[in-house]
Image (cartoon, rainbow, N blue to C red; front, side, top):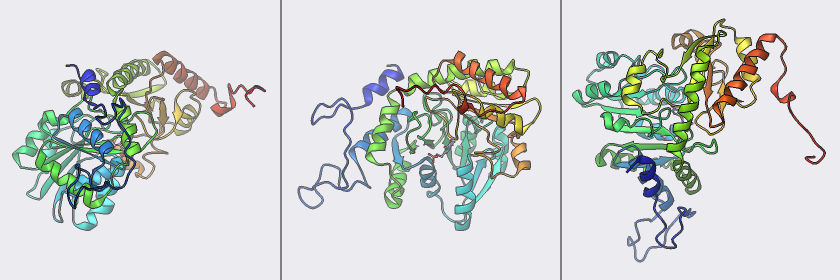
Length: 400
Ligand SMILES: *Cc1c(COP(=O)(O)O)cnc(C)c1O
């Protein structure tokens, strides 16, 4: 069975009523027949039927044994770090998501967990960083925002050899594109805020484990710490997953077209997209991803922040906002937004220049999106600065 069919087929019909849509069990507790005798649900922090459908679905999507839903991507990441103890060491991708960096460094270091950051695009760097204290290897592939790719199979071999856990933050790829557990990862996390829910309307996280044993540990932490996803948001994520395969295909098709156009644009210096033959890790990306995703980044031939600000302020379809993975296209200027807290020198080392612009390519028509970028480039280079909201706003008396 094709995955698109399997996903839809896996979402259960409600046994009680026949409801095609998964019911939202908006309850905190469940009546018991006798003390300790119940239908598998006693208190909704521990378990909730709506959340359970999502968790089982997440496990299936990633080819894992167990899935767990959290209040945010960071709560999911936090649950994984809680598997460690004082004295343990993490080896993490140097281009790590800023929120994970903040959590590892500014929360967990004070509990005696240390983190070494390394360029994991060369798997040898990870192998070289291993010590007898290493308990967890943490990678993202592709990374944010320059879409660096790490060889998950090679890093998983290192992890297995030294009996270290490998966790992959699979947010940018989505499980439709890439299933790290198939390549030997022990744990996968997602910010389900992004592609998995797909509509920019909630915050959620997922942890999926490769074994029941690891699953039981995450389940214990989920219940002990309590950062669960509520029933309504669980339902929204399930609804998002129903169209995940379709969306990911279209995001990738649009992103490929836009990346190819950007490569031909003289205003631009580098285009970062794993689907381009010019991408440094295109071959590895091809060997582990079915699609290349919906995020494209580029910087300008003249590294001019003011010009970049004019561009991102003058697109009409691409909305200026942080986040990614939704049906509506967004764009951002990382140096002033997502990566503002990173010192300029460190930021430049990872390719995030003052003029680097990140696109989250949505599901509008690709040609319309290209036309939008073209008009913003043309407008920004003519010199006059007019915010986009001043244009094309038709106010008719009927509307008022
Ligand atoms: C957004 C994001 C997170 C954090 O997820 P939240 O849902 O915002 O808490 C973690 N990892 C990556 C790669 C992300 O893009």
